[in-house]
Image (cartoon, rainbow, N blue to C red; front, top):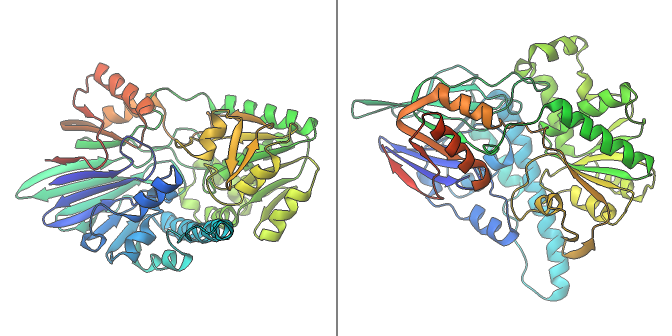
Length: 464
């Protein structure tokens, strides 16, 4: 058996790991790599294997860095099953369709600009139609159900507590009379976060593939993040500005809205209009309401009347149409705008940033990890000269990064996770993390008795 780390290797985005066993090929995730535009396009377009040779895909969850390149996989010849939880199937469908729309829109915008310069036109990475072609291949599998994903590979999906429908993956592989247990963490959530159940710890296995995004530190208490968000919103509104929040449409947006609702109800911040400017977030919220089986006991108590307060309150507006989105930029009154994408690379958030980045009254609030070379990372790094759609802007808006809202496990949880998995036989492989996250985690695990800990390079192959 071979495992090849074709994505999220020594970086966070583009999760994609290939398991070759019994003459078949099983892909764990098929996500979009996010980074510099030219590198991103080339890397996402060109698979390091023949897509038609892949027998099946197991999807951990529906964030685009885990599911977002499935349309290309299918477009280039893949025709097998894609296994995921019911909520992930529905979320992935809208995430991929939205991604296809963004790919088309951004290509059209850039082509309009390049046409005037007489340079080459740009093809979208994939289209909405390509995204829609993925849905017939997706198969819903409930948590805790054993199923055969490929010959000799039994799989079970286990609660990951990261976003709605997220799962870790247990693989029980039988090859030439040998049995091997592999645990793929996907993205591991945190305990005691709103809405979702806590992540389940692994069973003892032979090999662990673990995320390491925040392997360098434990997270701050979510209550501290709540206070930081309250303070930046309050001072921005009082100086007459807009609060612009780049946010992932699934998970983070719902959490932010829930926190803002609490702040308004408790009079911690002034009552101002709150806009979720993302058709994807609107559709995702509908799916949240539908899949109550993913919620924790506390959320169930709030759901008695059919609507969770995180998803609906007076003053909150979900925007679908582009025309309504444009109208926000014409308004001068204080407001809060939550918009996708979470790393500020694509979508409507770019227009809100463009219109507010040079306004001293306004604030840009970074509420999630930002990949290197993305616009979100440049903002988080407090760069003053910012390029958006090829135009240069000089940042005047306040930029605040709030780290305690992360839906990823911190170092303490990841160490506990590794202890539960044991993985003494073949070791622990750290993925989905930059060096600053993975290497401190590797050191911490070594100190705690885990000596076979590896940080594989992109496309590295191991044989077991």
